[in-house]
Length: 433
Image 1 (cartoon, rainbow, N blue to C red):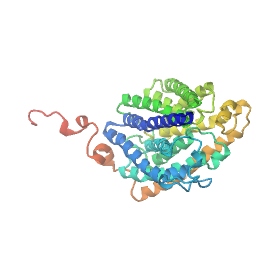
Image 2: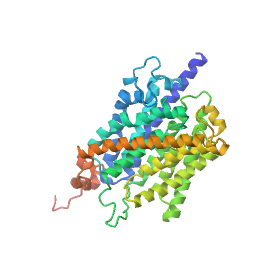
Image 3: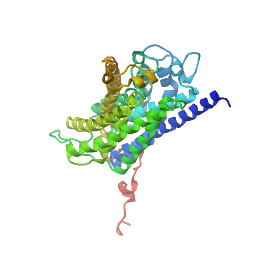
Image 4: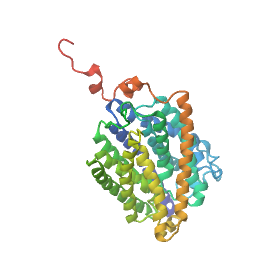
């Protein structure tokens, strides 16, 4: 076996492993979201992860992958429908020396994660039909367009935007869609009092939340390090290092911030701090030194907790704080390379310029800001248009009676915890028997 053939096989194996790790993040989201919501909705919240990934798989195969990576113009890809490859069709991915099928599976995982993030804003009150319609449209019309702008040879990529694994492409997109949904759906019943003060609606299982967070942390090594799509130079190990350091810093910063601001070392806040740090380092992991990764993770973890409290006090009911964890942290991470991108790493990756801290001037910072603003506007406008039309036609929200009884029983006909919630499973007295 020649060296070239061996490296091809190793790269392919690495990308397959990374794809499995990223797709496995769906299990993390299922546990995290189910644990962070109420028992009466747990089966629905967990089950929609399978539904949404199935929808994303088909839609991304048919149209989304071509719009993201297919040859076209600076705004969308126009070739490669149903993964049909021709000469030059997927030149935007020609740098990765692995089969097209593996490129697709790996990138599909990213699209599925972005959609999973969006669902956070729908939690505990959206109709099941909304997931079918919006999930399909998101994977065809929203996610791939920004993906093409940055990764598919589009105008932001041509400007040199640094978003190695998707702080903007994946996380900010999902977070903006979640925020729009949260606003259009309105708060859950009982979330706010008449004087607009919020009530705590705790999740039913903090253990699930923690396990979900740990699964996502592990999956992120596929997410970030896997984006090298090669093993030859070992650079994937460096990306894994910065990713892990940021996550650790985010956990510590978040739990300390919670202790200072609310007087309690809140466990869900710590988990969200990890996730926020991972979101932030996703753009920067290949461009910054380890010390900068720690700073980025700590800032994201701390600031995300503060913003989650702030938005809740402003009347926004975001059940799993999707916009704070994935949106605010996504912005922090994307902008951070404008400050911290190292000349050494910029030369290795060949993307963009060095950051302000290294005397690179404001050029990269401006590019990063333009990317964030452009992506946010597009996703917000298109998401609002789609969801507003759906609200006026098929409706977005279940009835009050269905919401009170829980989506497990009203949408699926069975509780996730029947022994606790279904009267048929309750112990009967002798008289009842």
